[in-house]
Image (cartoon, rainbow, N blue to C red):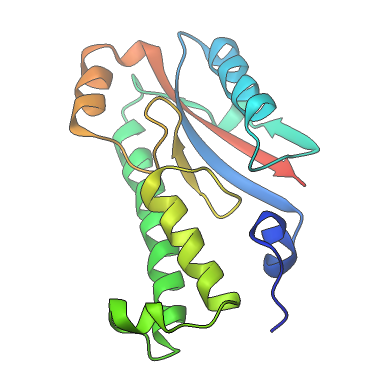
Length: 162
């Protein structure tokens, strides 16, 4: 498989449209939307030509389905990491020693993408992103903040194009 630079990952994925769920602080949809758009305007690793906020899919933490939606989004991230790791394992990579010997190319790019998930860098592979903690996960501390002030947190769904 021809491999591209990590910054042109969309060429490997073969698509130009991406869907993300973003946890963000905002007292209403508009204030949350503004924070998400500012993030993408300033973010340098991913540049979208168009971002469509799907208002009908937005959900406030006051909604009884919020926790379920949050957990499903986080699970989707875990599934993406699992699939990437399985792809790497298919190359007989089972230890750190094997990773060190891995030649540069598509498989090392998969490791790079996994690392981005683990260290909090948003990428086109990201499904769920916690804008408040710059993370693909949600800490116990953040869950407590949401629980104590649910009207200030929401998940926004976006559809974006490269």
